[in-house]
Length: 477
Image (cartoon, rainbow, N blue to C red; front, side, top):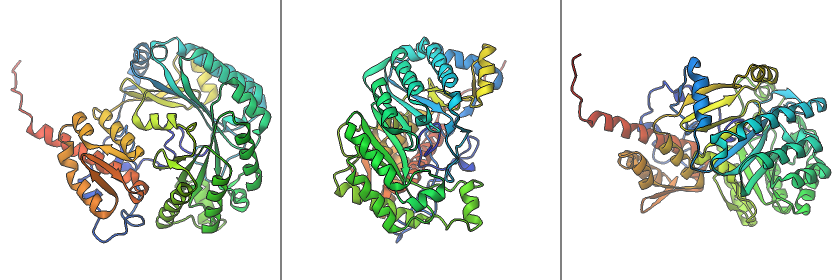
């Protein structure tokens, strides 16, 4: 896997403690850029974590099953997306903080049987059946580890049982290792319309040190083969800031992507997870240090400049496309807060004002299902400001935020955000035209910080509204 699990916001780091639901709101001043700083490399001292569900509150365990049953029984009016999680990998890559299970081919049929049984049950619920599904994402883990026949059976089952829109985007995430032409054709025949491969880098030396099994030329050759089939949108992930990744290697990665005829590419910053295997390897001296934040900023700007020069256009702050076939529906839907229906062990999603996660332990999940219990955990209620926070997240990810639209959702936001907008424009992080704030490329690199600042403005507006609300009279019993 190349990223986070549940929300597919793969360039974000784990939540910091100040983003815990019980943490006090951050002051607006924390998001102001001091004068004289270079906007790209030193606007902020570190990156923020600003998920749209910030401020969620846990549902009491004794109420969780009843709340979940009500969610499933409530129809949708808006379209939804589906995330299906495959928690298996052929090996544990050094940079990954989400490894769960080593893949064994003998588990494939039983695993797919479990998934299809879950799909059949969920497909009958009003939550799923009531409105179209516009995107399905098979993520992990490594979904392409599944053999061709079970993989095709899984995709065909999803298409047969779910109310997919006519042009539904069906993404298969994975790796070039143990994929191959025959498995790709089986996936396309079953209904996959998009393949996203986690390449990270084409530099064979860096790949091997990180635990990747194939060399860069082999991966490039397989991507070229997928493109030549002309059956689906083919995209890949690149990662910048890797230990031992030189400027020349990063430029070669970008040029390779541009030469392969891919439909799209995503550029991600490396996250070194505290306590993780990569951090330990760097601390022990077995690997060189990862890039600094300044070096990552320069690599990000170089990546966008180099790819746009070669015909790519930004669809999001980390994703570029070169063909109309690449739509990025799932990832943009997650950012905008569309209902997301989670399927499979460890999948997470949200609908009707709540978020939840499926149990990831496969044996425990099977035992709960045998008992007739829903195999979920960690259900929580979204904050009252969730629609405004999701609108901020979606707009910022797209590169332009309509401030008046957020004002409609959260009165007082426009005035509260004014000092931030003025500061960021002066600092070179954005521009303002009418009531729309658009990020510069430097602002895009600091996307989560700017989003966090707008969240602080939402907090400030809410606090002001509460303080000026007319007091209610006490009523004696």
